[in-house]
Amino acid sequence: MKVLSDYHVHTSFSGDCKIVAEVMIEEAIQKGIRHLCLTDHMDYDYIDSAVCFEFDTAEYFRRLLPMKEKYADQIDLAIGIELGLQPYLSKKHHNLVFSHSFDFILGSVHLVHCKDPYYPAYFQGREEEDAYQEYFQCVLQNLEAYSNFDVFGHLDYVVRYGPNQNTYYSYQKYQEIIDEILRSLIKKDIGLEVNTGGYKYGLGVPNPCPEIICRYRELGGKIITLGSDAHDPAFLSYEFERAATLLKSCGFSSYYIFHNRKPEEIGL
Ligand SMILES: [Zn+2]
Ligand SMILES: [Zn+2]
Image 1 (cartoon, rainbow, N blue to C red):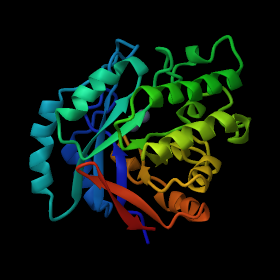
Image 2: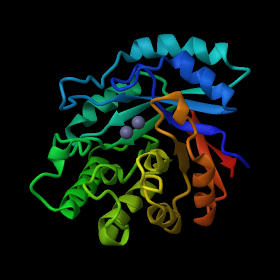
Image 3: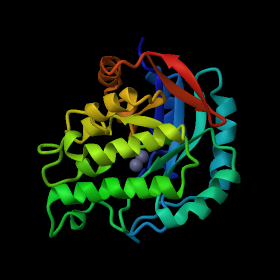
């Protein structure tokens, strides 16, 4: 069965996206997407002052709730958010999450000790392997600090931006810490996102890599969402067929969507 659910999509509420929600939704309808979740960036205290990754959540709901109705017979629209996790933000995230009725909350790590691997400075003056290791350590720290979200986004995000990307990277190299992360996710009932942005970045695989997705299942993980991380309608449901084939090869027979933060299973 074709995967018709994209659960990681940005709109102009995100500081790095210019596409308004209506355009994204209408393009998704054109593409035959049935379940769409908008997950705009909320990265408090983002380091680059040239870009703001915070938005007015009240306005977000004011704009999006009527669209749920407007497009109801064409697409199932879910209102989500992508929280940029940093351990000290847990109280702020707690307040945000409880003050709105989100359908879906994606937790992602974009900043490691105030540095985004997106910028080369994160890798400067050290081995790539150490920089990757530090990223995973930070993921674990974040999980200990705050875990009231539904799915963890692009688990090996750091690999997109490494000087050699995934050329020398493998799950086995970081097995100990990644297993600890996966066990923690499973224990907390947090799902794992298969983010097809990895294909777009030329990795040839999604984020996280196939070995991590298979390992999540091996350890007992069930909740998978698929997300394109589209900031442009051209990338909606990008390479989802490839990701679905990969999921089946790992032994998954379903993936999930969310409403009111409750997971709903859909067969692959
Ligand atoms: Zn992200
Ligand atoms: Zn994103």
